[in-house]
Image (tube, rainbow over all chains, first blue to last red; front, side, top):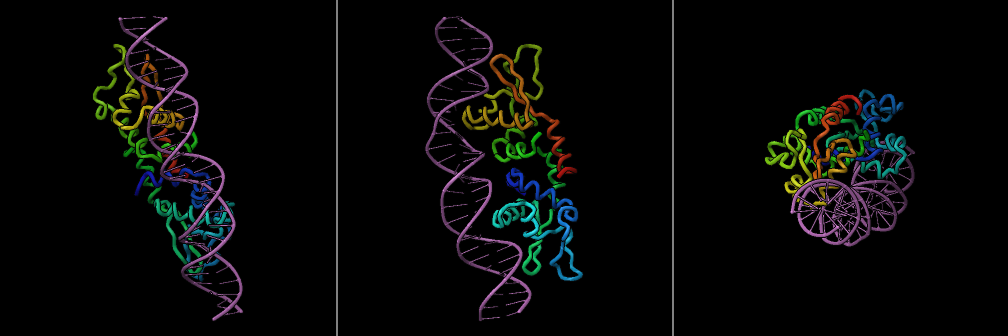
Length: 104
Length: 104
DNA sequence: TTGACATATCGTAAATTCTCGATATAATAA
DNA sequence: TTATTATATCGAGAATTTACGATATGTCAA
């Protein structure tokens, strides 16, 4: 967990929005999980295309944003068929809250 | 308080170090408050020159870093004579801890 | 005043980030 | 197989950030 990479990832309006949307995915992505096989659920996960549509940025940009946030530890992903589902890594957010209380 | 400006300010190793040093100024800046008039104390505050010396960056760079962190709300400053004392604005750090627990 | 010092601001080249379109890869469907 | 769809990666121009030296401003002491 590199704090600086986390802060760089957080230094962008669109990326910050994506994180907020993924805090309440059912609210911001109504058709959630539409492509998943029956019985499988990626709790809190949303596929790249849905995120892109909402973010109003190009496909490559959104893909890179998501990858960047995953590398920073803010997101994690699961692939199902041709879809990659991204969801928040809540551990990192708790860790950040703690970081500001004690480490920095 | 603009979260993005805070995160940008935190996206740099030197600036992050300065914040950590100012968390325990008496530990990292032994000759603290040397220039202050008798009876006046800028609790937790350290002058630009002392910070520059420790940060090993140019005077202009450090001055701009400090200004940037002040604008972001991470620092506050008091001027005494020709010296400007910077110290942490702890409110912002508590606010950040809370931000990661609830807002984002 | 003038000089010396602390800090702030300006102007900049170099490095990095942003964001895109083009293209590659991977999975599915026909 | 081939076509289609979803996502990832590549390459690049524009925009921003970095970090500096030079210079300006502000304060004090002689």
